[in-house]
Length: 357
Ligand SMILES: *Cc1c(COP(=O)(O)O)cnc(C)c1O
Image (cartoon, rainbow, N blue to C red):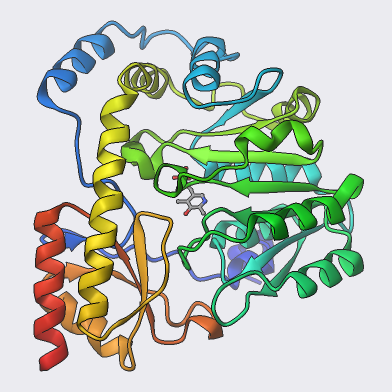
């Protein structure tokens, strides 16, 4: 046996590495990034702030100041706290590790965010995917049956969901949270909350097993890698035991504190993107393209020959995400990030030209 075969887990060897295309020279509409940067005066002020950061020191591992700012600025209910992650991806991994008792299971609707299943596998948890309905709404009966059968330790509900863009019915989510009850936790993953204007955060006090997870990535700070999750202090204290002590670096910490002082700038960018979302969705529908409802900063569309459309857009230097192979329910679906009016115009022109070819 080779070194690799001897040392590396067979299930890891069987994986193919996550492929991220090189976006240079392309209009990048594949990763739900915010296209806007900070205004110049804020960038200069941030540079001065970062110049004062003690790079020679380890971070203070409680992150008390940043956590307090997140709680007050971003609506965490009184009596609840947050835990920080190097992106919410890290939080998903840490939750999996903390809950990986022998035989423990993770359950989520599919198609959904791929990290739920990957983090489960890496931590040795079984992943149970419950298909959505063809219109991407929750199949509540199937969810409740799967919960009764599998008694999952962790249930993920992305609100809104990626890659389908829709908000699940809040009452159905509450039924799921209640059905999971005392034998599991439910994570409301609100990565797109700034574009959804709906949230389970205010409802944390109602459910002892609810965790609300968010990230600053889609809000305009994907590069700093910062996610947070709010839950009861007792639950967070357990998750905190598996967190690497210095998982948030001092530059991320200082940048996040600075930006939270100017959160209205990002809020205005999110509002602009919400309005562009409506405009782009209407334009796509006007071209005869099927567009699904979106509460996120991206649109899911379906076209009879989506692979060809994807390739033609790429020829015109527009990169979107072809999700058609991710799940049977997503056949011929493409995911498009909503961007600036200028980039959206480039997209719509490229689509128009590609459709008439
Ligand atoms: C993008 C995304 C995340 C991960 O965000 P990071 O904080 O950048 O790791 C989590 N959940 C969903 C549903 C996402 O789309």
